[in-house]
Amino acid sequence: MLEIHRLRNESAAVRQGLLVRGGRIDGDLVDQIITLDDRRKELQTQEDALLHQIKKHSSEIGALFKSGKASEATDLREQVTRIKSEVADLEQESKQVKEALEEKLLELPNIPHPSVPTGSTEDDNEVVKDWDGDLPQLNDGALPHWELGTKYGILDFGPGVKITGAGFPVFKGAGARLQRALVNFFLDEARSAGYEEVQPPLLVNEATARATGQLPDKEGQMYWVEKDNLYLIPTAEVPVTNILRGETIDHGQLPIKLAGYTPCFRREAGSYGADVKGLNRVHQFDKVEIVQVADPKESYAVLEEMVAHVEGLLNKLELPFRILRLCGGDLGFTSALTYDFEVFSGAQKRWLEVSSVSNFETFQSNRLKLKIRKPDSKPILAHTLNGSALALARIIAALLENNQDATGIKIPAVLQPYTGFSLIQ
Image (cartoon, rainbow, N blue to C red; front, side, top):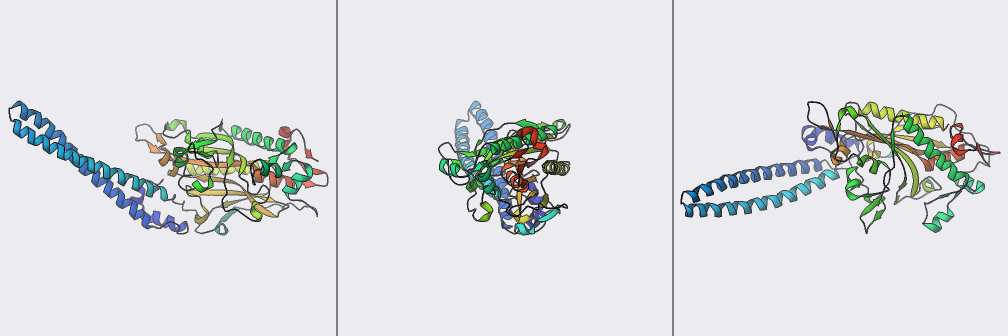
């Protein structure tokens, strides 16, 4: 959530940022927010003045009674009663204005970093690092991962449909072991990079989803347990970041680095076509997420560090990849700057997104009320960042497709200590 003082003091930059996002949000929303905030301040000023009168008159009433001026004291008491009624009316209006202000602020997305390219679709994303090696050249008859899964008995979509519905794959045998190997590899790499491993809940309440920006932006994409008003998490970012909600952190503790493995659940409403086949787009998948809380002056250096971490994982997995800087129109609601990683899928001959690494600046921390305390200064809002390191479904798709040959599916050397085998056959 953007801070109101930023809307006032950086109005031109805010409006320009909305244009970079493709004009999806009307700039009039900024005016509406400022108008509501002006009214909130007016009401507070009026209420404070009336409360001062009540306090003053209350002391006068006692003095009048003591001096035998009961009639004057009674008149003043009636006046205080009327003022209290006015205060109650002001409090009611103030509550309504604050609620309206909050709702309007929740409609406003984050302002893009100056480096974010203008654009409205993924076609406008900027390739900041392209693959400079050879792309996998597979033999004739190479199979996509969903057929490889059937051939080697490691991946089956039929039981998932029977158990739950489409988009819930079942990994079997070597496929399940490969899945577990990747989780352990990613967690070990995160720990080596200084991240503390946490295992968070998979269900979150409304306050948690709102704090990291999933509500009200993405409620249609989350699974909702209506009876308990809880949401299945779309990413570990949500519960992991909320561990620090409401905290004021000493500057010496920074950066805070957390990593969590969880299943992720996404409805993916409206998805269809070739893009959703096999593991390309599923409703449940495993992912290791890295989260950092940083000093605002250092957060973009931290972002580059996180990008380098993900890059290192893909290099160790020997997967061809490229890095994109998302344009304004493709940027997430909460993000100021996002880098997407895509790996090349040899049999499908297409790029698959496997990670997003983002800096949210103070957008999340303002909702979280997450602050940094520096010596001899007022606490300030922290910057929060997160990244996929990595999402497994499409990583497995690329690993299976790119490493197939006549002997079977070769396992990258870095994973073999985790899988206990070097070849699926």
